Length: 321
Image (cartoon, rainbow, N blue to C red):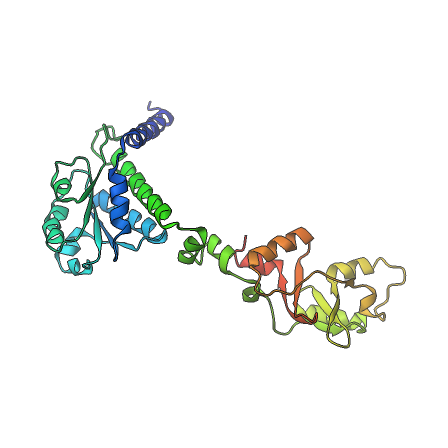
């Protein structure tokens, strides 16, 4: 019987061993690659075939999302017209573990003919890809994790890790910050935390606003129609004086003098928490709402007049964390 747990551990240990070995021997070639790419005025075009191509596509995506304009180009497509996608101000990152992939090797003379800077990644410098490269990043492993020592495993893991290392080095070189990352990922959690503001999420239309002298029975009707579980009470000048929530209403039922004919203000929460800055980040608003242990906050103008409301459910549904 095969011990699959042990086999899996051996694969991970072997791949980790190759990563550590490269980390200990990696030399100035990484710095040269970083400086070459950083000096590129155009895009970094990543190319490769087979498993190397799949890894290259991921590297291109990582670079593009971390401040290095990049895209993946398949060598076969390049030989059939897409070579024109490479501009005179671009650079190329070519990946082939053997360094001899036929489809890739065929485009190398054309890349050099156009004087396009080339960063190569292969197992050895004395390969065709290595000889064509202006900067060469060695991707050498002693053994693949495949029991036949055939399927790319350790080599693809190492290639991917070197691509990540290149991307991180370029981030450091450009002083790429989380705000920059968020600008490339506006739909992600970080983008939402850094760009979505209270004004983007607060409800402004058909707000449940009543006079503070409104009878409780009428306030309940407005509360039901408003679908916020609360109504805002304002004085004669339109200034917010209190909020009547469904929680306030439940507590009011316990009062021995409870009456639907009483003014709403008798049972409402006076001096409720409010925001006056509708440009506040929604993530900061969520933090405050959670610290106050409330579900709804009113956004007011400088004269305490309600402009909108922000409910914790709106923040959660928008993916604010």
